[in-house]
Image 1 (cartoon, rainbow, N blue to C red):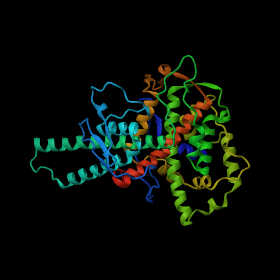
Image 2: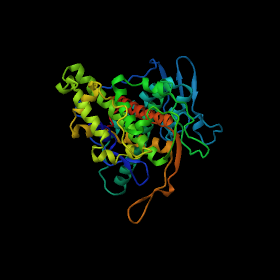
Image 3: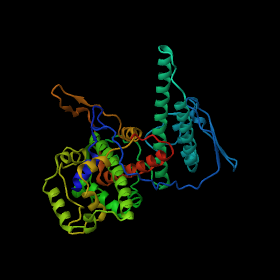
Image 4: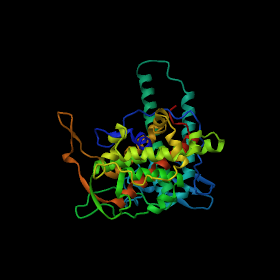
Amino acid sequence: MEAAAAAAAAAPFLASSSGLCKPSVSVGRPSTLAFHSNFRFSSKRLRTSLSIPKQGHGRFSVGSRRGFVVRASSLSPESSEPSPSFAPLKLESPIGQFLSQILISHPHLVPAAVEQQLEQFQTDCDGDKQKEEPSASGTDLVLYRRIAEVKAKERRKALEEILYALVVQKFMDANVSLIPSIIPNPSGPVDSWPSEVGKLEELHSPEAYEMIQSHLALILGNRLGDSTSVAHISKIRVGQVYAASVMYGYFLKRVVQRFQLEKTMKILPNAVEENSIQQTVVDDSRISAGEVPSQVMSNPEVSSLPDGRISSGGSGYGTKVSRLRSYVMSFDSETLQRYATIRSKEALSIIEKHTEALFGRPEIVVTPKGVIDSSMDENIKISFGGLKRLVLEAVTFGSFLWDVESYVESRYHFVLN
């Protein structure tokens, strides 16, 4: 059942014609239960005066009552010095570039900048609703609708980059650096980045991390404790594993919030309270025997393993199943699918763009027989310790994405119902 939960969480991310992980299902409706995110910015509230850029403008400033000014002058094409890289994805919209500059120089001001921009979005939307379409038909009406489409596209792009900037800020607050773009290294492994596994583990609750350990065991198998051995893996496959792990982290954080709510209200199912050891042994033995649902076998996580096997390593034989894992086991397939679905198109787009920025856009060729020609695929050398770091970052990215999506939604409604 736990393998099915992991599979359902990753199922929407299948290999697409671009070679990355596009969802096979459309953006679904969110849960009917309303959850208030406990997401909090770590910075204290500052009384700031922020000048947020309009779309198409390139110079703006941030000032506070302490008298300092940050000028995002590097937005102009004439800027000479490149900005330091803090994430693989480069933000392109005026709002995104503005937030990039603040992340570099004064990251504690990002919340204030975001809040003011979201207020401006809401004001613009309210104003658009009050406007009526021209009564005349023809050119005027077509032009009016075209302008509205362009504005909506710009707003969506800015929303995507606001979400991304907030996720990056949470990594910065945790003092964890995001892995830079991965470039194959003929002379050795690509994972020259800092490990920081301990820091990433501490960002999750003990029960949530137990679920993450099972996710890692599904991917790494009996190599979970091996940090030095080097594997030769398809770059496309690793990208699919990364995107699926982001999805899993998003799913897990969403489930944890519901679990905590029901625990607080004392309405957890009886099966969760019982914590059956027998159920754990049965489920884990089915995994080790290979009796897993077909969607698990087709999952990029499993097909990415160096030895192609599913391992039950790290599943915890003979131990009492945690309440959170038992809670997830109690979900029916419909609930599992709903919680595994990304709520907004903007968050979904960020996952795809971030993964592509990290691994590049692969060249995929489909033969006349409908088979994917992998001859253009690159193999990379990566240690199992580096792969573990990669997966942990992805799960944490997904968890942070749920937090910031909920935070932005509480101030500017953009999640589809």
